[in-house]
Length: 176
Image: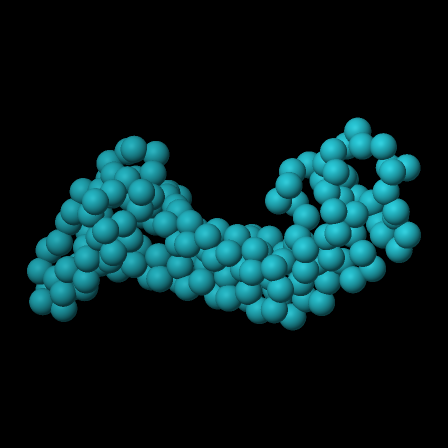
């Protein structure tokens, strides 16, 4: 697909790649190649709206992605493991895990034992005690907050961008 773009970055017309360009008045236009119809965005406002939607969807997906808990003493050894909320479908995802955390904190305050089995992202099962559940809760809280802040930062950059190229260059990542 070829597209004709004016000096303001607005889409003027799309034509097939094999179109005979001698039949078009290209005065003041730039011809660009696009792999699909949705690659070209007609103006900054539409570009911002599209990129905001992409970032918001990516952020929402990241909020349900694995959370890695490094250096957790489990079953007598230090281990890094991942919690996967999606394995808890129908049970509230990370909200379900945070319920374990709340009960663990309560057990610690009452000086009562608390141990719960949990299936990790690799499908292994491990038992965590109350102190470990509190550590897990802290990692989840910190990681999800970082993902949310990253999303908000990207949305702010989209609003500050002044060209379509700047806007479309803003993509989801947890690190710059």
